[in-house]
Each structure stands twice: as C-alpha cells, then as structure tokens.
Length: 451
Image (cartoon, rainbow, N blue to C red):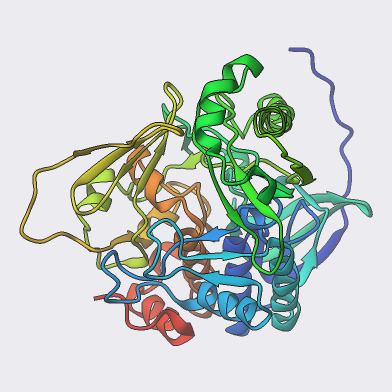
C-alpha cells in the first residue's frame, strides 16, 4: 500500500466537558441525557443530521416489548418508555404490547427525530451534528484526554474526563488499538423503504411474490416484514437482504448502500408487474442501511447464547430483555427464531414456518434475560472509556437477541450513569459500585428490575 505523510498540525480545542459521547443513536443520546440529568457537562458527536440512528436514519420504526415473555412484569423502562410516552401524546406511536409478539411499538420515525432533538436540548447537551470522529488523543500519562473531530468548521479537539463509545462499530475503541473482533457470521444488513398506495396491492402476499419472482431480478432470498407508519397512510417495508458486507469497512459499506437501493427498486417493480392495479409509489429511502452487526469489543465478560436462552441472572445486570434470538442467515434464506420457552422456528417468506425445539420441554421457562455491566468494559483500555450499543461483548447467539433497540438503549443509559459515578468518585469505570449504578438507574425510571 502506498502512503503519504501528513503534516504535523496544531488542533484547536473546540469544546471541553465532563463526558463526551461519540454516536447519536438512541443508545448514545440516552447515555448523554442520563449523564446530563445527573449534573454532568455533556457533549455528543453525531455524523448524521439527527439523533436516533437505526430508528430514524435507517427508518426501522419498531421497538420491541418492555415486558417479560408472558406479559406479567415490565422489565424495561427509563428513557425508552419516556420517549414512547412522548410520541404517544402526538399520536405518533401504535402500542402492540401483549397483543403482537413481533412488535411492542411502531412509531413515526420523523416524529421521533424531533422528540429526540427536544430531549437533547432540554438536557442541555452540547450537540455536534455532521461531525465525524477521526482519532483519539492521549495525554502524557497515556490517559484518553480528547477526541479529534472534523466538520464544516474544520478539525478540532473535544476534551473530556470520561468517554462513551456509542458509534455502533466501536470506532473509538478500535482506533485506540483495543482488542476487537468480528463474529464468524455477521448478520446481514437491510435497507428499508417507505411506500404510498400500499392498499392497491389488495392484500397480495408479498412474501410469495418475492420468492417466486425475485430470482429473475437477482433479488436475494432473505426475510420480509412491514408495518404501517402511525398517523399516516405510508407503509414501511423491510424486505432487502445485503449479504457479505462488513459495516466497519468503507468499501463494503458503500457497496451495501448501493445494493440496498437497487433491491428496493426491484421489490417495487415486482409488485407493480405482478399485482394487477398496483400503484405502489416509493416515498422515502433510508439515509443509511439498517445494520445488525459489526465490530465487537473484547470486554471483561462475553454474554453467551446460553446465558440468554436460559435466562441467566447477573449481580451486575444493567439491562434486561425478552426479545427472542433472531438469527438472520448469511448462508441460506430466512431467519431462525429461538424462544426462551425452548421452541424454534425457521421462517422463509412465502413458505410455511417450520417449528422445532432447541431444547426439550421443561416445567418452567425463563421469561427474560439480563446483560451484565462487565460487557461494556473494554479489556486493557483507558480507564475512562466505556462502550454501549451493538458493539458490546456478545457471542453470535446472544447478539441475535440483545441487538434490538429496546435492549441497547439500556446499555446507553447505564454507560451515562456510570460515567457520572466514576467522575464523582474519581475512579475508573471498572471500579464503579454496581449497587449504586443500579439504584441510580432505578431512580431514573428503570424501576426495581434488578433482583
């Protein structure tokens, strides 16, 4: 590889704060808001033009259940529930709790963008949109001292005492040279799309249509789902499948974005050609792919599929979930769903689902699982760095369940609270008292979830 040498430069410090959050998904924003509500000066850096990540720029407008699998105990609250309630007041959310196992809530992603703006402004955050993280900066003692960013105003440094990597791909951790890894089975990406005139399909089974006619258009066989956007006549569809890309690789990501849009047009053409009277019209494409998996950091503990499927409880739990294991395959069509009650289904659009068991029947079943704080603590990294989001340490099966937004949102809140506690006590993230972390989360709306 040919190289050039950059000229050494002096970079101005453009902002100083107690806590710096990289990444403005709901995970990152909730980390920032939590820290700010506890009195910290917080700056948040986001490469796009809005908060919300997959929920807004990728248009994935589904959050899953806040309850256990049998609907007896609410296991998720905090800022996720607060935002749902805010959207509800605007008529921008549909509640499916306890009525549909596939959805907890569907929402209007555009309304969510504005709600998240208001949440951030009310918290007093310093916000940098259209700003890209480029490099970490260490002080003379090797402590993470600042991050270098670039935006329309040029290149600058943001200094902070604590840092939260919520970039989705572990960009800060990776550029610090910390141990990271990729799963041997990266779950493929999906490009969503919003359509009008969906009613003109007259209930045609789009799964069957895509299975029968997709090969003619070189449309990969994957999985398909869709839902109406609350408060509108628009339909959100996720039926593309982008195989074989690594979202942490620039060339792969570029190829994936183009391929996703191509597949959206193919789906539209199939519907138009094979459903008489169809007037399906493409209304919106996502600003980025719906990414399920990328780089992971190696942490103090790796959550395993056995932990999730058997409902393991942890003394340092900071998140809980009931979403099933949801494996999107790279090597065959469809998805495999494993449930905490021991059942398993294999689902391919247009075909009957195949139901088996991944374990024998038992007298009782776990109804939720937990994520321990240790999964957020990078091995061997600066002691003022924590991570949150899909890059935490999860094996492939655990990741297939934990990766959904209602679960990852909690990791953001935990990271934000942990940052404040670490600063208050002048201690590394690894030494934060878990009992105090859990009680502070509960005071902020998590309720007494951690037994």
